[in-house]
Amino acid sequence: MSGSIRRKRRVSKTVTSGKNSKARLAFAILAFFLSAGIITWVLTQQPQPSSSGNTSFEALRAVSVLEMPALAVNIVQSSDVVGRDAKIQEVLKSVSVLARPGVLPYMVAALVQSFPTNLEAILGTAIDLQPDLVLIFTEVAADRLPSQIENISYVAGKKSPWNATGIAQTLAQQTHDLDAITRGLKRGIPEYQPTTDAPGSSVTAGFVAVPSAKNVPSGTSTNHPDSTIALPNVEVDTNSVSSPAARQ
Image (cartoon, rainbow, N blue to C red; front, side):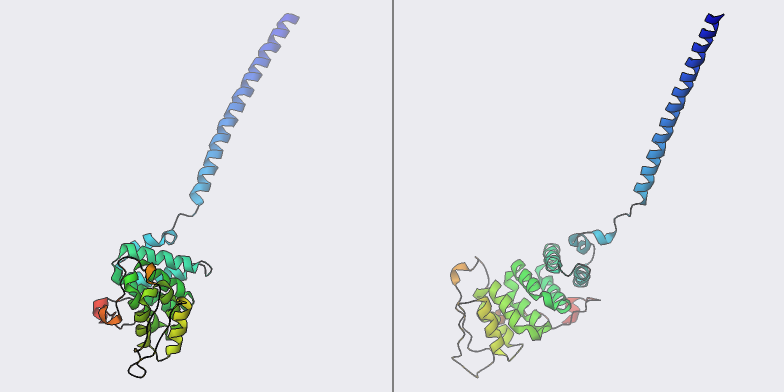
């Protein structure tokens, strides 16, 4: 009799153990799918990358050439003030790859007009990218920022000392403050020595640059303003940029 009871107890324990194993398995499966569901939900709730997260190159590539100056201003405006110089360099380099060199003067005009405190980054980067357009960049910057003639002279002279005479003559067409031009060039080119052998003949007379010619890059233009292509005297609207041809 007692043996029968023991057998029944063993069978009961086996059945109970089997039920517990199935319950644990079912619970584990449920927990797995519940965890997977939670993870999936969390991932789907993450914000999707927006177009504003694109690099400057990608953003500028998506618009026409005529829209690039205004978009460049918006891109720089949306960046942190501390990193604004780096963003300016980024957009100018992007445009130099995406568009023809003739677009850069319009970029310089739009940027210096909107970010005068970043003049050195704008003008210096543009000259680095297109050194042959140094006089045009200088003219555009002076036209937009006539109060910063000395700083413009300094940056242009530092970046392109072999064009000091042309820079001086170009800026002298924008202002009669020849002292400001000279001060800027001397800051940028320590060996610069102006002379006034023909005083009074014109505002552009008498400038002679004495930079070190040994550092002139091969093929770099040292043309005077008369031999360069003049930029049309236009106003750059940073909200709506019209065709360069239409502005002439």
